[in-house]
Structures are given as C-alpha cells and as structure tokens.
Amino acid sequence: MNNDLTPTTNLDLRGIACPLNFVKTKIQLEKMNSGDILEVLLDSGEAIESVPPSIKEEGHEVLEEKEIENYFKLVIRKN
Image 1: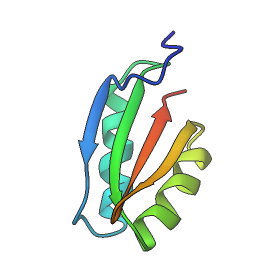
Image 2: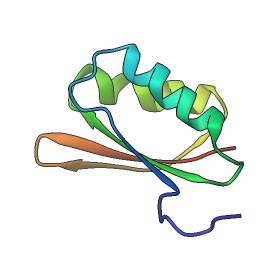
Image 3: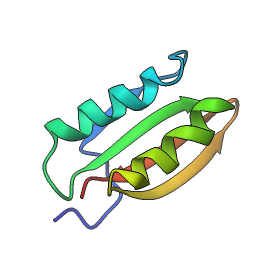
Image 4: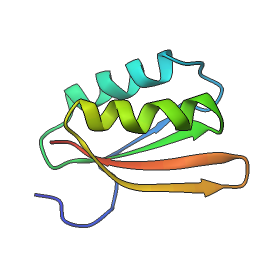
C-alpha cells in the first residue's frame, strides 16, 4: 500500500464543469489499484465544494485539500 502522498496519477480538471469533474475523477479512480494516490486539480467554487464530499461517499479517502493561487489540489487515496 502506498503510505506517502506521492501521486500514482495526476488529473488536471481545471476548467471542467460540475458534475463532469466528479465523473472524470470517479472514472480515473476505477482504473487505479486500492491504495493508489490520485492528485486532482480543481477550480474553486462548485468543483471544490462538491467533489470531495462525493469522493468520500464513494468510500475513498481525501488526504489533502489545499488551495494554490486560484485553484485547489485534492489528494485522494483509492479505497
């Protein structure tokens, strides 16, 4: 299992509207192995407000949610 926060995969979803950014995140997670780390870049606003709770509902772990200038970095561990 991957115990550090080094992403296995990166997904840049800046400029992608809701709910497509969650759908793309979910599809990427389905391709990954349990314990893998996914780093997702999201716009501020609706994207960062809706994607993390939806990811948690899917059973995955949100390890980090960090604002960087005008966007957010989300680090997720696949369950």
